[in-house]
Image: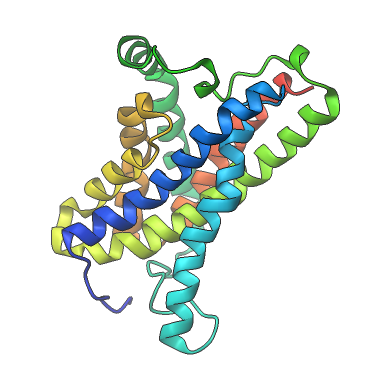
Length: 242
């Protein structure tokens, strides 16, 4: 059983949930026009901040806390919700969580598009970073972008986010009791400042993951689901790169 960690204040929760998203968005906004001017895919404006902001900030912070706490490189006492589960639970719960997330993103896509058109049509076109016309770029550029997309958005980013948001932050919101998973996901969705039109969709897609993590005390359920969701999206968009 995880030992109850020291709880964050509301301000601390807001700070640690939203600061990395703000930093990612700043780099994204600064990089986007430069990529456009140099005829490079706008998707790199998202992938570069994953590498230089998301991973160093989120993973670096919990590693620092682990070293300070344990006097060695260990996440014990920092990243919680790592209780073992029977294999059958993974085979049952991961597909259910994945299907729920896929349905959320698929069925609510028209809602996302309507929100985008109604409130964010003033944003430059490179904000639609996932839309790539392969005729605009050389094949080596497209191939490199896809490999980075798969590695950073498909695996490294989701693993880091689950360690940070569900393994580190969620257990430090237990003063909210049953509301903790919902608030965690609300802030996680808001943290994606660079795609605010998907705010509602992300809440519906990720709330079951956060709730299950808290219920089962197991972060690996959400980690595997998040990776499968993102890699699936990468594979579905592969035709844009080749």
